[in-house]
Length: 75
Image (cartoon, rainbow, N blue to C red; front, side, top):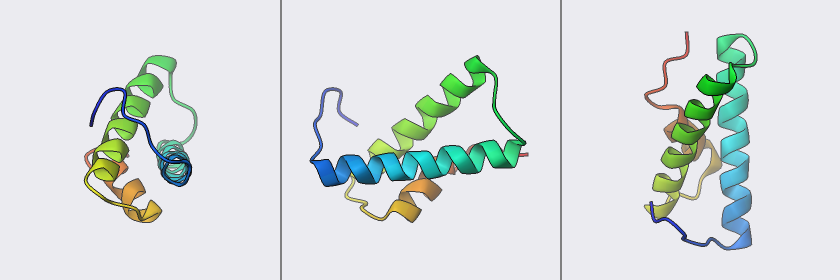
């Protein structure tokens, strides 16, 4: 993941869709909203994973979401 990298509008929409789906699934799995500090950490991890996958060439929203949630414990 490059700091300051730009993405075309379609890729931004894809990133947003994957992030929103991953976040929704995480909150549902954990039973609702998270504390602010936990949410900030989780959002950063999800974002890093999505951007890393996008930078590697992934363009499927479902696979991006799955990649974003991999390694996050959802009890």
